[in-house]
Length: 245
Image 1 (spheres, rainbow, N blue to C red):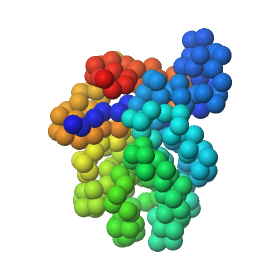
Image 2 (cartoon, one colour; image 1 turned 120 degrees about the horizontal axis):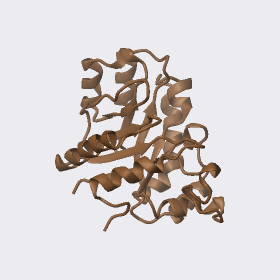
Image 3 (cartoon, helix red, strand yellow; image 1 turned 60 degrees about the vertical axis):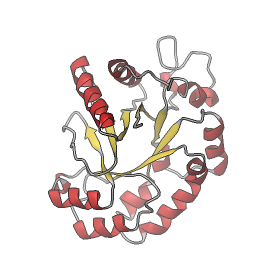
Image 4 (cartoon, helix red, strand yellow; image 1 turned 90 degrees about the vertical axis):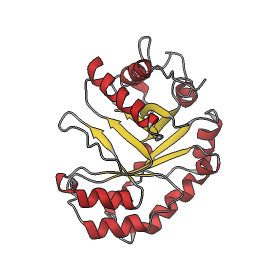
């Protein structure tokens, strides 16, 4: 059966700790992930965008989370921002996958998000060559941040290689709802969400699940913000709970 997984983008934020915050005041930072995994079934790892994790770090992620917990990963900036999907990005991409291999072996690796920089304009040939080289054993997601990519040709390319088009909603632009893969990946990045907004998203996720597709949705991280409020409300609206029964 298809599943809906709701979580946050990141988890290791000290400002989230306090009497009325996400983490209990006395919790050690080394215990944040273990506590987080009692609340949600998934997390989006933003930190991999900055640096590749060590084997010891990945091993701790596995040990500190239950078997059903899934890590989605924001791909390293070398691939998307330095190499900008050029053929020479392939080597680093495979290096990244080697670092993440223990997660994959334990079936704890979720989709891998390839977020393009805002000044990266549409280039169909480069995108097609890059997508063709992606290992099909993984779930891949593209996030486009330049309007030139919003075209049917790009959508068809992603559908051809079964790569998801990320549904990303920000304060500046609405989400693109494009059905290109056998799963949905959504990023809720607005600074505020009303109950009506979250109900709309929740109904969308449930309908996607009824259509047989897994859903992954992550609420925006803010060091001083409270994104768990939106995640908790989404789970309540969908009546799916934080953890599987």
